[in-house]
Amino acid sequence: RPDATRQEVEAVARAAMIHSFITKLPQGYDTIIGDDGVNISKGQKQLITIARAMLSDARMLILDEATSNVDTQTERRIQQAMRTLMAGRTSFVIAHRLSTIRNADNILVVRDGNIVEQGRHEELMARQGFYSQLYYAQFETY
Image (cartoon, rainbow, N blue to C red):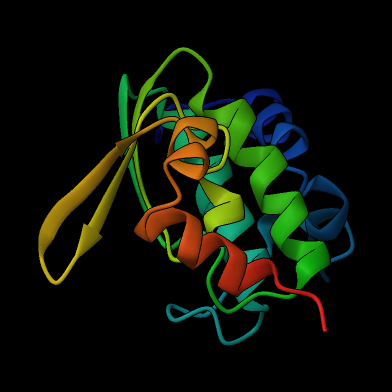
């Protein structure tokens, strides 16, 4: 939102858990970041994107692989920011990391381009179908 105040920008940055990082940049909120985000990590780029989405206050969100290519600690921060972002909004979340969608109201499981299962995490796990196979494969401990 081009008309957003500095207060609004900082508030969403705090909610997206990226404010601390931004304040440590050479010019803080006035630092220019490269177009492709080369100056920042993928996780930091994701958190800034979440803050921008919060600022837009859209009623509907589409998040595509929001936690891909980040470490576990950053993934947790992104997931926490996503929960704040998605509150009270219709959200479509595309994810291979099932921890990202575990708390979704409804999960559509796609295999070979077809929806093969649908339900909440607990329901899908109880069915012991494709979703539970994927889940156990991701969280299997050796």
